[in-house]
Length: 381
Image 1 (cartoon, rainbow, N blue to C red):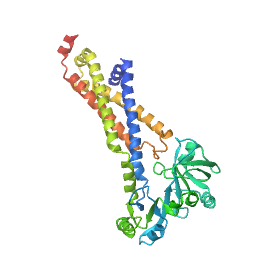
Image 2 (image 1 turned 90 degrees about the vertical axis):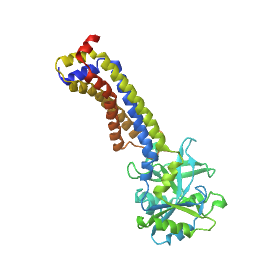
Image 3 (image 1 turned 30 degrees about the vertical axis):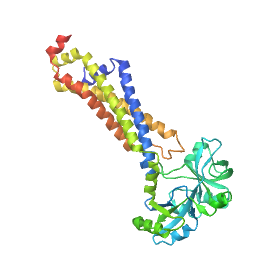
């Protein structure tokens, strides 16, 4: 009988136990896949959206404090500033309170100059500029609700009361797995028609595009110095730092994910180790016979260790495969997790951890089998 045949025969000897052990790996790696997706979305995925040549200018008081529209021209006069655009968070729901949509009132004249990676066909953009109630929506948002160019969409305001009617004039696309395609853009001038008098002529924040990213430290200081000691002081950061601070509002996501993942894999290690120990104990006499037939101690050890690695590999591949398929076609929180995908490096890391657990859990039983004396084993029968 071949060595491979021995391994397969022993794996399927207890089919129910074999299936449960495989299932443990599958569930653990499926959970690992989801945790990796969340980590990418809240960490690397969001920060990868940041442009190295972009700055975000907020009120020094906080996100909810508006800034004067007049600041745009003053920032454009700072050497090294290539373009400046502004946005205003709208806050609204579509049809149902659960359908939160990330709506932004934008500067139609400069949006594409600053966010050039967000691609909109020229014809659609021209129609949008001409349409006072026009809207440009992300490809993911369009897919989520089935929107298409020409649709009429009523949005119920939350920050600004009332129902706002929009016409879908275009759909934008970003870089795959990097850019947020869940946004809803409309004209800032349209919002100004409905806001209270106190908010007239004010915007939420500015995004500044630089001619040279290396000038960022100097320009950050220049912008904040320009508006120091005014009624509306500013706080300027790189776009990456802005995203990082935004993620911190949700708590220490990284620590939470690592903690959950650590508990899952430690539990998996205990389960697999116990399973392999029981399997070896049940086959003590058979292992002794193998040694009596001439198999070396090292061969017996590799024989037991291989069983553990095969179980780990099958379960790991199934779990990671399911995670990849599910996260490709389903985002449970489209309004929160804009970037939702399982990267290749996380899959490779999951496979490496799977093999490590398979090796560690099978190592102690394998060493025990290697040290087994034929006389002692047969005496127990």
